Image (cartoon, rainbow over all chains, first blue to last red; front, side, top):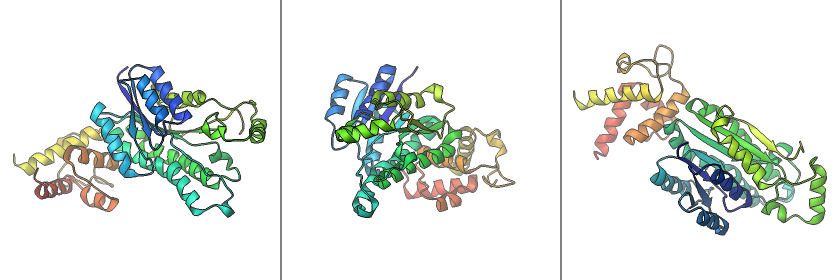
Amino acid sequence: MSLRVILITGANGGLGRATAQAFLQASRDNHVWLGVNTRREQADKLAGENTGRCFCVSLDVTRPESWKPAVAEILARHQRLDVLVNNAGSHQDGFLAMMPPDSWQRVLATNLNGVFHGCQAVLPTMISQRSGRIVNVASLSALLAPAGQTNYAAAKAGVVALTRSLAKEVARIGITVNAVCPGYVDTEALAVMGDAERRRALEQIPMRRFGRPDEIAAAIHFLACAEAGYITGSALKIDGGIF
Amino acid sequence: MNNTAELRTQIKRLLVENLMLQSTPEEITDNLPLFGPGGLGLDSVDALQLVVALDKNYGLKIPDPEAAKKVLQSVNTIVAALEERLSADPR
C-alpha cells in the first residue's frame, strides 16, 4: 500500500472526527487533512495526537476562493489527493411558510454548494491522477423529506443527485463518487434534541437505537477503499432500518 | 523542427497518452477534427481530460464551453491557442 491523501470537510464535528479516525486507524499510509472553519479545537487535538500524518487546513466550504489555497497546501506537501469526504453541513429547521430566506440560503450554501465547490476544487487533480474517490455525506432527509426541513432536505437531495450525475461524468477516468445517507446519528446535532423528541425519534427506528459516528465512518471508509472500486453513483442509507 | 511543429507533436502525444487512444501520434493529422464523425471520435469526457491536461502541462486555461469548442477542434487549433498564450506571456 502506498501513500493515500484524504481530505475531510467539517472535521471538527463528531462524524468528521470519526471518519478521520477510521482512515488513520486503517493504515499508516493514510495521511488525513481535516478541513476546519470557525470551530477547530477538536480537530487540532486529533491532529496533535497523530503528528506527521494528520493535519488541519482552514476551509470555508461555501467559498471557492477558500478551497483553492486549501487544496494547494495539500498538493504542495503530498503532490496528490486521493479521497475527498464532503462532510461539512449545517441545518436551520423550520416550516417553509415562516422560513427566513437567509435560512434557506445558508443551508443550501453549506450543504449543497459546498459539495459542488469541493468537487470542482479536487477534480483537476483526480483527473490528472486518473484516480480518486469522492464520498458525499447526504442524509436520510434527502429520501424522507421530513416536514420542517425543506431547506436541509432539498440540499441533501441535491447532494444525492449531484453524486449520481458526477459519478457518470468521471467514471471512465477512474474516479468514483458516492453518497451516504445517515439517519439519526449520535452527534452534536442529536444532542440538542429534547428527551421527548429523542423518544419519538427512537420509536421510528426499527433497531431502537441511534447510529454511532464510527458506524457511518466505516461506510465512508469502505466507499473510499480499493475494494469499492466498482461502486459509483450510489447513495447508501445507514439508518437502523427506518426506510 | 520549428516550435510549432514540435508543439504539434507534443499535443498528439498528449492526446494519445492522456486519453488512452488506440491511434498512434503519427496517425493524427494536424487538421483532423477531434470530435464528431469522420474525426478522432472524442467525447465530452475526453474533452474534460484534455482541458485538465492542457492546463496542467501548458497553463492553458479553457474557461468555458464556448472557448473549449473553439480551441479543441483539432491539433492545429490547440497549437494556435498555445502559441497565442505563449506570445501573451512568454515565460
